[in-house]
Length: 175
Image (cartoon, rainbow, N blue to C red; front, side, top):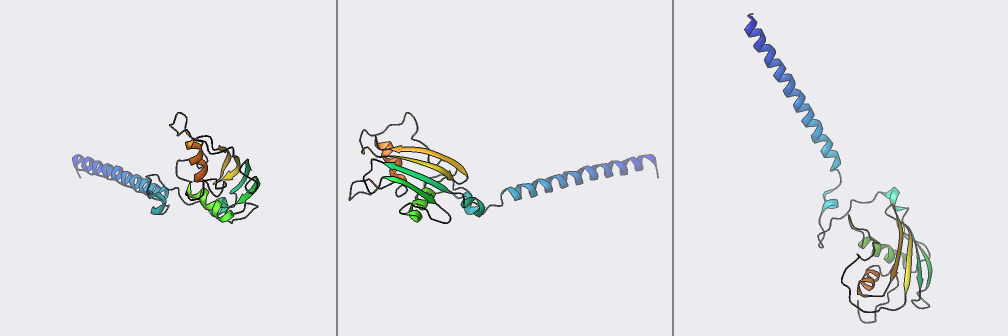
């Protein structure tokens, strides 16, 4: 075998070796990406509002969903401190199943369910009464410490989104 033929063969083997390493690296990368997207497609589906739905919460995380709701100046039947457990539903809250559903309905990927009204927003100048509420505890593995009132249209809307976690203080005949 001539020296030129030997060098050509060695060059081919070197290229094949580099190509096989490249293919192995590419296959490994694809496998890693595949494991990252193992959540069901529905977990990434867009909702009607255009926000992403979070991946499902693991069962072992759900049992830690516990909120304490303290309501003041909302009326005798509504005032008090109530415990709420979700997954499974329970506690001293008068409507645990519906209250948990209200919080779940407001839980969106990338959006805090108990976030305050953003600063500098335009709100209607209406007064919804002297009621106040404080919600503390844990929801979806995150600490919660949120206060609520009904001093303007934005605060009223924020309160109403969490009915029946918070008492329904809307005038009768309106939803």
